[in-house]
Image 1 (tube, rainbow, N blue to C red):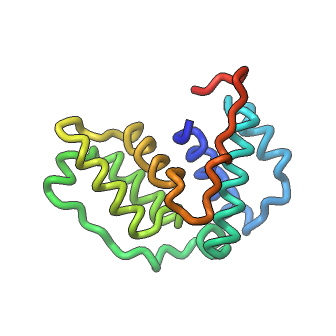
Image 2 (image 1 turned 90 degrees about the vertical axis):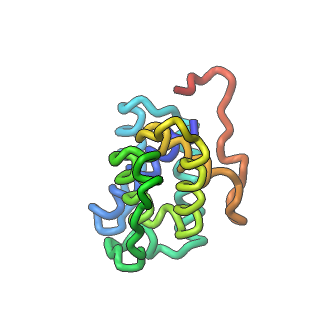
Length: 155
């Protein structure tokens, strides 16, 4: 479920950046997300996490297209063998969007390396990234964001 919430957060960040920082049409965004197959609980959880992070980290992390604050990170040979190129790209993109701090970025790589000998693909990286982001490690994260009623299908 965390991967799906991360997908929604990713969508929200892209939406905000392409609409000059506007979240004025939440109903339209929600409708689009429901049409893509996301549940109300997933959408609500993602909105809650996203808005909490905007308030706690400052709006710059989402509303700025400036990726200058991200230090370049070169994957080691071992990391390149363990993490598929598309998964590396996904992780870098999430980091450049400001969704992962430097510490969370490194933590995600460490977790990917622990999965050896299994190579990490994009789906695996989404799982690892959502685990790091939504694990409650953030002092501002309320673990009750992820309430899903028993009658909803979670993909």
